[in-house]
Length: 256
Image (cartoon, rainbow, N blue to C red; front, side, top):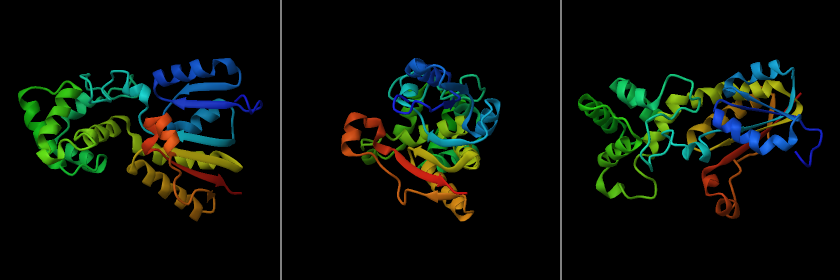
């Protein structure tokens, strides 16, 4: 914002904590931005509320942030935390409810679709059997359960066995993929001619959705895709910010 004096930014997030952090960083530019609590999918309503009919650019940053991982809200399996995983802490659905009350078939579905988890049937069955005796209340309890399901040769790989299970449940709790599917086409329609849309995703499910929406908007002659392949971080960027290692950036330009 220092280098572009005439820019005005509207920031959208459904996590109060993320908005607070953004306010801290942007406060010296007060008057040149507006931060609004809202899901991405309501981007059209948000811009209407602030009397913006067209935007010169959008930047979407999907997935969970390092701030959220450090906030003891159940996103991380590396500490003992309550099973929560809500980005919007005012919503009712939590990871605790998903784990302890979803039927077996629904658990299998989200582990398979949202986690691409190879052992989804065994994990779902184990969750259901365990919760009959005692409700699963913490991240450590769930992570330990998944760890024991994995065959011993696979338990100590680079990626923890519980990673995909936690990803799947988090996506379900926060409706993450449907939000992307709704938000991106709306944003493209709200771009002025020549406007730029950028989307950063952090796993294959998100990136696939972005890729397919961009391709469809290109077919409809609304969008020129500026990145044939997603841009990934350099070695230097990963060293500076290890959390960026799985980031993929796709960029498009609005056509007349």
